[in-house]
Length: 261
Length: 254
Image (cartoon, rainbow over all chains, first blue to last red; front, side, top):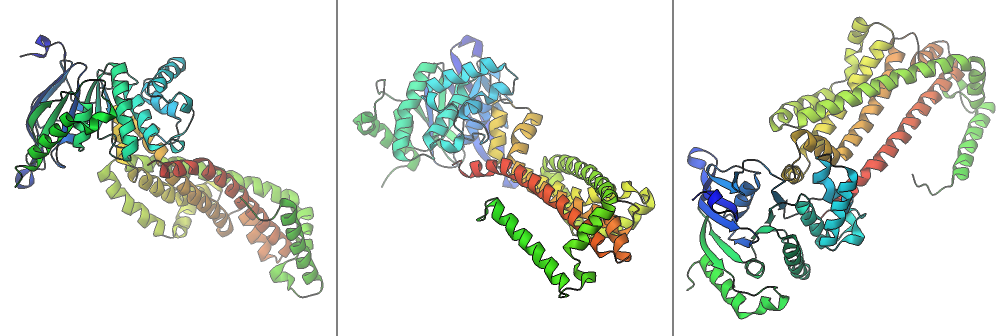
């Protein structure tokens, strides 16, 4: 199966291995991880701490390299960051404190010396998309945690990537803000028509957001289950308490925790 | 600089202190050979103001060149050494050891190599300023959060862009405090060098007139050196206020 034969496959990871250290002290962070993500999908990756889910995301982002195996984005091998194809949102917003919200969003464009007018237009569009039109000229310290993470999402989308990688982006937010950010993110996803790979340790978050949940296990880090989520879209906060979501959450919990006594 | 006193009050306090000093000298409370007096200083300024003005210009020139050298070399060295983990492990202890050495022991060597003129003072003062600036820059670069660099890499920044647009900018508060220490040391070293071995500059005039017991001249020279230090302090405080803001914003990040 080649990437060319599956035109809508945005991510193809094949037999990815990643080990850290050498000799007796080396350990396998990822072992034989393969996955396929089609265009427009929202995929969650969930697993216990140390299962290598963030490592996998780093490799797909081109920030780290696999020991063995290959990653194809749109059929192209990824060995270094490709901001034209991949946007990354980290756990912390990592906004540059001396730049305004708009300037932070424009940062990837400024690095390419794009004309100011074009940059302004693009940051305006994205501020509209993430609902921060009024906050363009505010500095990071003037924004709330949720607003900062929305700016970070806008920065991730500014080069119009095919794929948005998110590494526990809402882990540092309080529960109410997080719940609001879920709706925001799903709206942004629907409007930007991008493909999202979302790493989280929250089972409910993983199920609520995704079309498919990939469950990982630890030692060695590997994907043990691929669970489609049969919840209609658009998702609403009420679904968090729904039976479908609850059952899926329990199933993932048993996969991660092992058989219960 | 927020003072509980207004400018006019502060001026009044200073004038009162000067008046008290003069009165104490007039009534014979203070030995003028040790403490001088405002009127003696004013007399020196009137008599030899032109010579002191010339010396002031000479000394300020040396300070500006030495400071510029210390800033450029110090920041450049600190950034280059700080950009690599192994390099910084080698460089940091050497720099901190060098700061502990009283550089004045090398001043006679500078005189032997570069002569008695301005060049030896500039080299000596630039060296004195270099080490703290280089160390502060190195430590500043090393101590920034690596996740910012990773974010910059993910949005397509080159190694140079990461260094100049993210890492150096994040390290700026640390660099600025290094500049503050380095500049002070450069000023001290220029004047010190002039006082030890020289034929020109404020430090030379202070030494010269002290040998002749011209107390007013000595104090006038001291006052001019203090003016240089004060102006430099005001400029550096402004720099710190401007870029200390970054530090404040950083703390509000999460």
